[in-house]
Amino acid sequence: MMFDFKATNNQAEYEAMLAGFRVCIALGANELEIFSDSQVVVNQVLDEYQAREEHMITYLDITKRLLRRFKKYKISQIPWEENEKADALSKLASATTCIRSKAIPVAHLTKPSTTKPREITIAEIQPGPDDWMTQLKRYLEEKILPEDTAEAKRIKYKLTRFTILNGKLYRRGFLKPLQRCVSGSEANQILKDVHSGVCGTGESCETCQRIANDIWQPPELLKSLTSPWSFAMWGLDLIGPMPIGAKGGAKHAIVAVDYFTKWVEAEALVHITEANTTNFVKKNILYRFGIPSTIITDNGTQFDNNKFKEMCEEHKIANYYALHAHPQTNGQTEAVNKVIKHTLKAKLEAKKGNWADKLHEVL
Image (cartoon, rainbow, N blue to C red; front, side):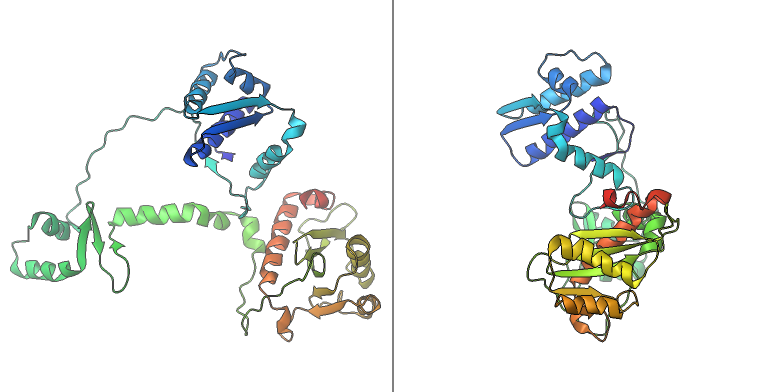
């Protein structure tokens, strides 16, 4: 969960707990067991501590009101060392400002739960004379047609494909669901919501734009490339050059991804040489995970050379190149590896000159 407002530690603890309550209520839970590493929040809920600040009193009231919706609950304080998973998720939410995880959804809280709803006056907006839906709705709802005979005839002809449901105008499509009709102002708001929401994240992230994949339609159908077991098939690739060189002059990183588990091994490189790539495979794959059955690379000279081929032949490793001439390597799994590689590159660029030192932390 990400907060779009400034929150103290105690506020964040309360907001996280309230969000969990709402999820449990939506799922129909009757019994609840709560673990928190916040001494203040736990003891306030247990009435051991007194809430003094106005906003903390409000948080406590909301918490107790939601807890009354459960038949049974228990809240306990645990050491922060035992709360590592929740702590890791909280750090993940604050770190993913430009990359959004698909496996772990991140919710946005735009305002505190203690914010009181504003009182507003609801007024019906009358459509203007230029609203093309006005005459259609007037006839469908009130059976009123324009005085102009030709205009009335035209409207009656169009009405055969329109209907009203719950006060909304819909158009009947051929072999399609009903299509909602919207005014010009509604259409502008819809476009604004779409492009400023989830779909707009990539457009506003400069790093995402620079490292995005080029779209290439393959000349043949994609073939799924399946690894038979863990660490049996690896894909190798290079990241870089990075915009800012690291300490020691490293400007590239070599990345290996296991096709089965998606485990990633990476190492910063000062120079891209045959010896460096071969030693990386030996140290990070062969000596750590055992001899794989297959290694897939591109046809760059750092992989397509005698030293690399001799290593593969010595250990009986099948070496394939991801080329159009080798359709067996053009699989759906390649797309997953690209996501991992580009996510890694985006995170490394954020580390600037310290990216080489932070490489394993990013992994």
